[in-house]
Image 1 (tube, rainbow over the protein chains, first blue to last red):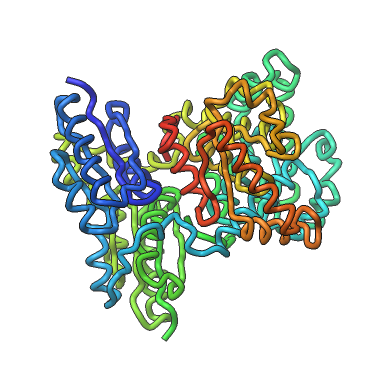
Image 2: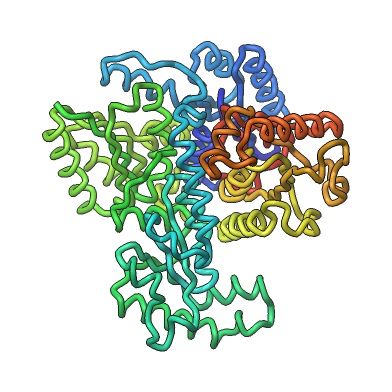
Length: 274
Length: 274
């Protein structure tokens, strides 16, 4: 008997079905499942094709697949629901109760969740991404006036991925500035940072984890050596304490967790929602 | 009467609740709602605080809020469910049926969906992001051997955000290479690209949309002028046709749609799931 297969079926990108299904499957032993995303199932023909694929997979695996679906159109949903599978549809479960609560029918329209419904929020995400790239690693601090947030931390503490995630996911303008010898030993904040103290947020990380990350990047270097790494981490934390800069420990955090903690603690408004 | 408020409540990042709740709300007129994300509701005290906030908001708005919750622990969920709100919980709806189907209890553990459960997939996302940054805009084509995918297109057709999204969301190693005069007028593919033809994927875009995007960036420039823009778009499309490079029109696509279409058509495996 093979591994059981989990399908994420959607009439659009599949992001909603993947998010829902992954969240649920992490509550079980998620190593034991194969995962297949089937996006853009937008016609009855495609729905029937998916049904055949699901059935064939179940026969191959020797047990029926699990299908997480986010099919807005009930016609398509009914076709896929006919598969020999354990079928959970996200819209079916929630759209009806929500229509009743709001006292209005839903649009039952596809492509709204992760399509370009709103060109303005699309543009904002792209602008924010460009801003993050243009303001990565301390480049062009003269643009900090436009920043919503400036992340500070030592090299490889997670600044760049966090800025990019905040931009792509939430349209937030996040710059980042690396803490180096320039700021350490009580020399204080660079003037570009001092001017925008209320926008600063620190990232810190355990020395052990940072050594691992740096060693993978530059094995045998001073950059990755334990004394240098722990010196930098200590100095960065001293700087956060000295200037009262709020900070988060990224050691055991995912990018999503770092981003959510920062938004939660700063109260920064998401400019767009996923 | 104020606008109705939608809460996304989670015992972890809130990404699941936001993604699912937003998908549902886009089926209604989503301009009419205020949105509030409340992440890291991990103790009964915090749950009670959220309940009080929800109730106060309902009184202020003059109508009861909508709460999308992804609270894994039933104790916390029951507290928030007591709010005077329309309450939908994703785990409550699906976890029980899924336990029955799988014939095993779920872990009921928080921080699994978007926490660092699996350091390896976390590292892969970070590596992929570093790869995208190091291989943006035609930098270091010598690394294309490691790429899963190389996006080609004219300036501002959406290459960079797509690469970053593929990296952060799915751990995919995506490089991008800008098409310029070098490749046009039948001069053919740069040798770095010709060597990796099977990894190429083209992005195209309507001239009108590209003019808008470029004008916002460099108003009055030749770069944004209609003849130049339509020349570049035509030439890029001719190149895709000549070399049989699959491509997607990004004009009306969100980043998620571009990414999903590419993964769907290339059959590239997601290296991690959200």
